[in-house]
Image (tube, helix red, strand yellow):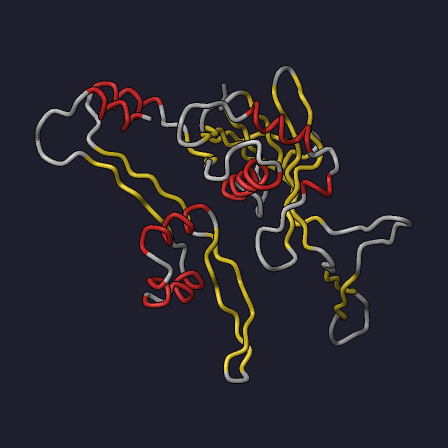
Length: 266
């Protein structure tokens, strides 16, 4: 199995390098395989329109497009597009003082609708093992958010409170180090996903950034919704990449029990 990030040359594009990520798909924080429930969900939603997810209040859409089995792997395309998006173009013409700019719409198709793709990623899943070839706009966090919606909301293959996480596989060096020592604590973390929302205050139009996603829901449930108004979360999301981290640690110097050690390893 491929470990870490692997550079791969694409056939016919000698100067183009693609990155492949190897990660683990965790279902409900345990060791259940991701592949079976995902295959069940995709079989239930044969209509591709039913697999389209709107992650925010804008026109951005995510969807698993083509999918199938190949040598036991669940493989597929993970796409993003913005509904109604137009592409800017520049007209290069001799004898002018500046080039003209304009935007074009996707070509019309009778009885259908064309949209410009924003990103396209590819995935292959075997059990709990996830191989992802991301794009600039689609990575593991976006794929994780989509899977939570698909399995919990769109199909309810899994209970509503089940969390699907796409996490890094510890390196061989880290695993060997852990095997020699008793764990005393673990730290889990994920980024808050900022979503832009337009609002009008005293006649002035402005953009406010709000958080969404599993990490935000957990933090809001723990600390209460009023906290975010006091700490100006909107300003922080606009300026920085805010990460939520949870640390589980055994206090004191005493040896930990086997049961607690098992909890930390999970």
